[in-house]
Amino acid sequence: MRIENIYKLYKEHFLVDTDTRKIRKNSIYFALKGENFNGNKFAKEALEKGASYAIIDEEEYVSSEKTILVKDVLKTLQDLASYHREKLQIPIIGLTGSNGKTTSKELINAVLFEKYKTHATIGNLNNHIGVPLTLLQMKPDVEIGIVEMGANHQKEIAFLCEIAKPNFGYITNFGKAHLEGFGGIEGVIKGKTELYQFIKKINGILFINNSIPRQVKESEGMNRIFFGTEEDIPKTRFLELTPFVKLQLEDNVIQSNLIGIYNYTNIAAAISIGNYFKVKNEEIKNAIENYIPTNNRSQILEIKENQIILDAYNANPSSMKVALENFSMLKNPDKILFLGDMFEVGKDTKKEHQEVVNQIENYDFERIFLIGNHFFETTICKENISKYSDFSKFSDENKEFLVNLTGKTILIKGSRGMALERIVPIIKED
Image (cartoon, rainbow, N blue to C red):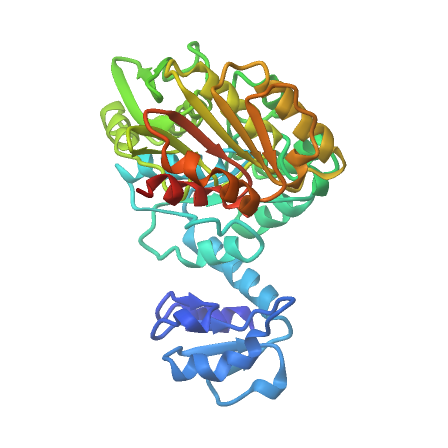
């Protein structure tokens, strides 16, 4: 069946599902396949649960006229999303970067939502499946779309741009993330700036952090709006950490709920984009002050008179470096640090973990706990640093210490696979 015909079916309800456990009535079910599952097997179940149609690519699973056989379900999903994007005819902001993508996306969405009907990537739907699903969630009344794009090797961003066709672009930063797939920091920069090249090709507009020389260099000759320095318009200025970022937007003082000086840049980007789309400063202030991060992304928890900074969603050498710098800048006494391994670092894994250890040994933290095989293999010099090969060994040996913590300032940071948020319920125990 041609995409135009599938699009007519999609337009009946603007609903697409890929998981039979969450089928919505009148949706179109796309039978995606992976290493450990075959969605074709569940097409009949999807129809029985209320799906209007099921798109499959294995003939043996045709069960009725509601089953549509295509050559490749994933490609059909991507083609349908691309076709829908062209029909939308709205501004779409493409967003990528090594760190801060999701926080930036949510801030941008919050700011633009003050004036427009927006739709932004939900959760981490930012890959070759997630981006098409994000686009297909945009109904005709949406006025601006914000599409997060993730990548762990080159040409991924270029591919996602061809589907989403953003006319505005923003890269949060170039950092040491997914080094294994990109082949080093230069590979990261080449991969991320595929967004710049797409925006240049369609004569779109880029939002460039003026305080990052490499971003300025990589975007030369393109349509650019600068932010990040006091000379840029609108004028923003970092004020202080409380530990939350406090900043000034022209005549407005904004008290955010985001920790870390690195989040000042994310806020400044949202301000710049909001200003371009003519959102008033007072509305921008309201949006930023009401945004509260979730999903273990730099949350502040108050437990037993402890102030806990929970940043257990992700970690790489760049984000780890700035998180530690920020933690050291806090004026709070009695700091306790829990760090988990960083994944997907590639051939420099040993070197990067040792550099983190070297960095923390320069800080005056009360206690430091390193958790995971990579940190366990590092060399430590200070007596206040303890290391454990896995979480079980750490929790078994330190349960009493964790339960009795009180009046401390605590940072918990590690890669998602380390699940260091497991520390929090132990601290809560009586």
